[in-house]
Amino acid sequence: MRESAFGTDRSIQEEIELLRSAERGLRNRGIEQADIAVVLGSGLKDFAAGLEEAIELPLHSIQEFPKVRVRGQGGMLVQGWLGETLVHCLTGRVHLYEGYHPWEVVRAVHSLAMLGTPNFFLTNAAGGIREDLMPGSLMLLTDHLNLAATNPLVGSHNESLGPRFPALNEVYDPRGRKVLRSCDPGHGLREGVYAQLLGPSYETPAEIRMVRTLGGDAVGMSTVPEAIALHAMGCRVFGLSVITNRAAGLSVEAPSHQEVLDETIRAAERFEVLLNRAIPELAMIRDPVKKTRAKRTKAKGPKKASRKTPQKASQKTPPKGSAKDGGKRSKR
Image 1 (cartoon, rainbow, N blue to C red):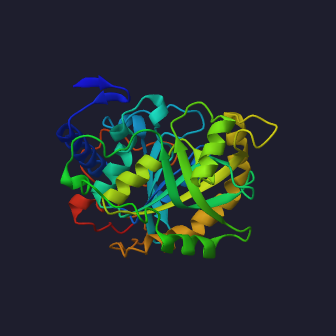
Image 2 (cartoon, helix red, strand yellow; image 1 turned 90 degrees about the vertical axis):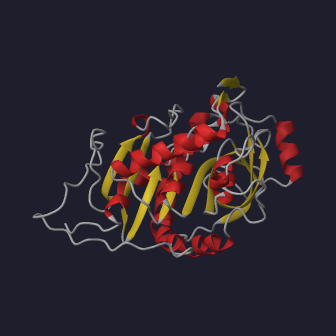
Image 3 (cartoon, helix red, strand yellow; image 1 turned 45 degrees about the vertical axis):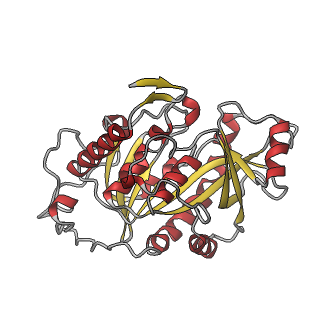
């Protein structure tokens, strides 16, 4: 094991063993294959509170996962129901600019994909470059520019994570964009190309002019590693940016993290309405195996995990409804 520019550099076999260990640990704590997973960007973590029959796991309690350290990011993995759709929510993520290895940045989504979850909705906060992308706009990702100087597929290779040379023609599913447009609460969704730079400093005006010349419409510091890694595994990926500010040089105000958080709070209601409407339809695009939601009774079944008190990490026997129990949920 040696140190690299992005943290600890492990062999691919060590990484696969970590992923399998994380998968086993999640199953043992009641986390199973869901219909869709949602990664919530800066300031957007509150959506997870609306899921029913929730199991909440602090990310720091999953020893294989790196720690979330950025203000405004949540630190939970939440599994719960949105109607008849079983959803995973990661209320925060880690970033390359924190010094993490690219494999660490995508480890959480890799682990959920190894559970069998086929659909992933990646969200972020971004700076608007195109003239119509003003603060408060929502932009569906049609493509991306990877300007972060690295890639989660760099290094030794293992077929369980996808082919050595995956095509990236349609990383962001076009049918998903159609669903999201139909579910928008009426303010009009934009579409565009998202550019990821490394960060953590905001871009210079010259860099924004470069990104615009290259075809970028919005800019941020996340999402692209996850999208590449998931697409390589054969997962269906959807992407959405909440535009929180005008990019550097396009406004008299310099970008700030507080501005990002303030604007996501203002956009949160529309964002949550959109997700509540769209997620059940997005989850059906790839026709995942649907589970039948059990009727609730007070007489049977494990107690519902509190949204405020995470499920204890000492639980050893997976509840009925986990993958080890054959995928059947107990009647409640």
